[in-house]
Image (cartoon, rainbow, N blue to C red; front, side, top):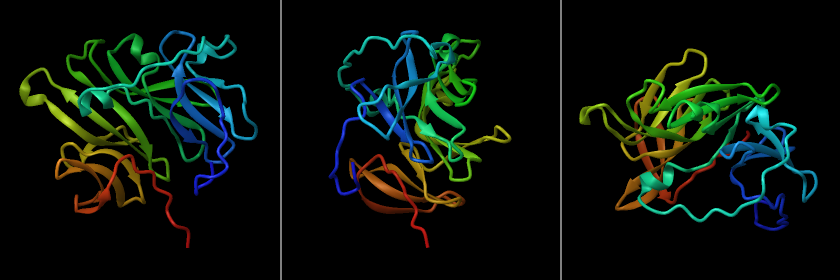
Length: 238
């Protein structure tokens, strides 16, 4: 649809979650059931509707028949329970990679976050929880790229081997070049969207509700913006 809500058209009849525009605007990536029975990532052309989805991940599903269309019920429960199954995907700024919940790593771990290379279908596990010798539990969802592609953030939850290692819902920032990770923001912050290298909009908790909050990434300074959630930032061009 257009920004004012007009011109709506349906792209696919398949159940889809967490859509993400390709940088060139020609494709939308989304999560849906794959040929393996687990979650997969597809892309669909925005040029015509309806169009046939193409499999991006898992790579082994490329060329296979699309699985039967199914309808999943809404996920209910606490914030943590709802976030655990958030299927948001994120296309990298250069269009070469897609970050998404799950992937091939789910054959080893209980939950994980992956980066997949669009051209080859190769996957890289970014973070994993449970299984594979890992004693923690948790999840990593709602990935978001910085505009230069160097930093990737996500919303995380973790249960350590002891209570001291537990971390409630929080935000993690990951350096794709060095692999370094750090926690940003406050506990219960989620759904980070980068404004620039120094600022982001996050969903935070305030007065028992969800608020959009401007977060300065360097020193953690916070400014409440307005009530709401799931920010998506389009920086102004000057």
